[in-house]
Length: 364
Image 1 (tube, rainbow, N blue to C red):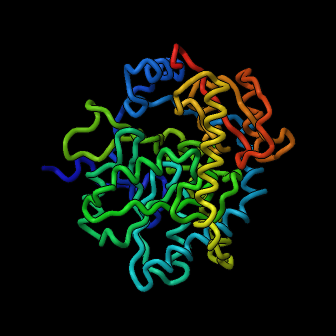
Image 2 (image 1 turned 90 degrees about the vertical axis):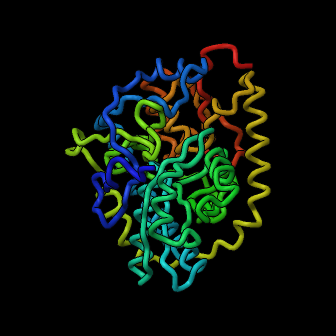
């Protein structure tokens, strides 16, 4: 059995920052509308297609830069806190950061840099995980052949409603190759991560953008035409957008502040997880009832997940907790540009925004 078809690569990052265990392929994009229809009809799984990506216009990029200026210091502090928590788990050992491509990739880069700045050995790989289809086991085998799986922690940027966290737990339930489903994130409003710097649903600037802040790499792809036995899950790369790439600039901006920040205790996170899960599920039940659907995949809670929905799906409406909140300004911008109705989200919610994906058929 082959262990890989294409060699690991680093995208537009410095090779010391990350090793992508993905297989670059050439694949024609599927329009957002066609992709949504194929997903909801069951004709194709979302991972079998890729939507087109373009460089955002200047007005949207200005919202990204404003978010980075406004929340960059907070992210740096949270990265420092998370890095310290990871270092404390396996003192004296190499730390193996396994980020979940692609939202986890910039966070994984920042964690690895911060750990190294404090004298810890750290390796960073970015691998694919796909809802309903699990983690890339070829990538896991690759890592296990080079590191002790007990030193590995899986990293994402945030939790929405916990779908990927659940997928990770299910995929690693039998500890393949010795891996366990330890998940670390910056923000965990769903209460689904094992380690988190905060439960606050705040705007992490990298969450505003797609490939141009994630190494010029697409979301992972898993279909029979692109991925054969022994292959890593696939991706598309975007070298044509190199002139607009912000991947290195983002981590170069945050990393020095993260290295200098004093880690904060996160002892209360474990105690809060149960309550956060209950609050998330209560909100989900309410929104599912209001939307007249049983399809949980249509509900996208959290600023970052709502952003993804507005960029890559066909939204029915956007809910925001506070229309004056600067952290949802880019969502209002996107909604206005696509004539998506915006309603108020209950003020008691721990989430600041939720997107509802439009139903293209009878899914009730």
